[in-house]
Image (cartoon, rainbow, N blue to C red; front, side, top):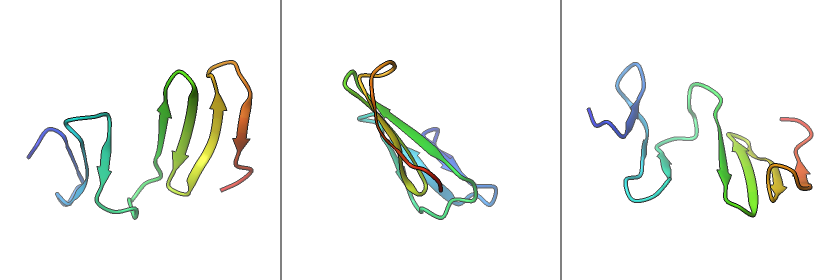
Length: 72
């Protein structure tokens, strides 16, 4: 087993962390549980989940919310 790989209970590989950057490669979008991920730099914050973008904010944490999804 590799330390940068995420395994399911049946030892199937769900995904793995990239070694050269702050990234994660998913092997399938049909994961057994909901997930969310936040991308951020000094200018923008973007939250995504298994359905797509959730919200985006300019100059976090205190500036304007650019959009927010109303429901899943």
